Length: 463
Image (tube, rainbow, N blue to C red; front, side):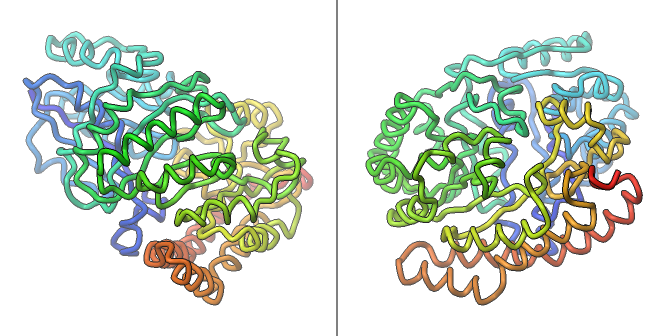
C-alpha cells in the first residue's frame, strides 16, 4: 500500500519562496505533524512525505498512491483543496486533518473523502485499516492524544533541503489568547512528553539546528519551569551537540538557572511575543506575563542575551488600541528593547478563536469569500477591518515598522553588538538580511492585495 502525506504550499507566503531569496532556507520548517503520523504508520505502507514549501512536485509523474493524507493550516486550505481534487479525480481517497479541518469541518468535508479532527494519533491506525478495506468513514475525531503515546517522528523521510530539524516536547496552552487557536485545538492542559523520548528523538535528527515547535516551551507555572529545567539538564548530559530555537513567554527571562541550563542544552534563540506597546493592548489580548508590574523589557531581553541567546520579538498591528503611527513606535520600541529580530504581524481572526467570533459578530471580517480568501489568512495580510486604521493605513504602518527596524544602519549595529558579545553574529546577520530581503516581496504583495480586496476593506471608523 502506498501512502502520500502532503503539506500544501501557499504561494503568497514570502518565507517559503526559497528560490527568490536563498535566506528563506533558514525560515522553512519541516512538517513535523506528518512525520509524527508517519511514525504511527504500519510497515506494510510505503510512505512518501511531500512538503510543497520546497517546491510542488509533478504528481502526475509519481506512482499512483492508495491513500493521500493532507494536513492544512487555514492559509493552506486553497492549495490543499486543489491537491485533494486532483487525487480524487484519479479515484484515490483523500483524508484531511489539521487545524483548518477541525475548525471548518463542513467546508472540508465537501472536498475530501474523510476528515480527521483534533489530534490524529489515537485514530490514525484505524483510518489506515479502514482505507485498506475500502471502508473509510466520513469523519474521525482524534480529540486530545495521550502525550506519552506520541511516537518518535520519522525524520528520515525528509533528509535534505532544510537548515532546521523540528521537534515537539509539549502540547496545549492555558493562556487561551483570543487570537490564537492553540487552546481550541490542543487544549488548555499543558501536556509534557517524557524526557527520555525527547532526547532519543533529538538524537535521530540529522540537522545540527533544531526548531522546538512548542507554543510555549517552558510553560506558565512553577512545576512547568521545574520540568523545563529537568529537560535541559537531560539534553546537556546527553551531549547532543544541537543548537535550537524555541518559543516562550517573557517569563523565560525571570529565572537565571533556567537561562543557564537552556544555554548549556543548546538554546541559541527564543521567540517572544511582546504583542503590544500599551497595557491596554496587552489586556485586550490577554498577555498577563507582559503586564507584570515593574517589568523592564530591555532588562529582560538583556538578561536572556547574556546567556548568548538571541531574542526575536513579535508584535501585532491592528489592535483596537492601535492608531496611526503605531508602526514607527513598534520599530523604535523593538530597537530600544534590543531584540535581535522583529516579527510584526497583522491582527488576524482565525476560525476557532474568540477573536473570530467577536469580529464576525461585529461584521469586521473584510475578506470573507470562502474558501477563496483563506489564502490571505497568513497573519501577513490585513484581512479584517481595524478600528482606527484603513486598509492603506494599516499596510503603511507595517511597511514603516519593517523598514525602520530593518534599516541597514540598525542591522549593522545589531550584528556588531552580537559580534562584540560573541552571540551568534552570523545567525543574526542571516536573520536580519532574510527579513530585509522579504520587505521587497511584501511591498509587491501588499499592492496586489489592495487591488484584490477593493472596497471590501474599510476601517470601522470609516464604515
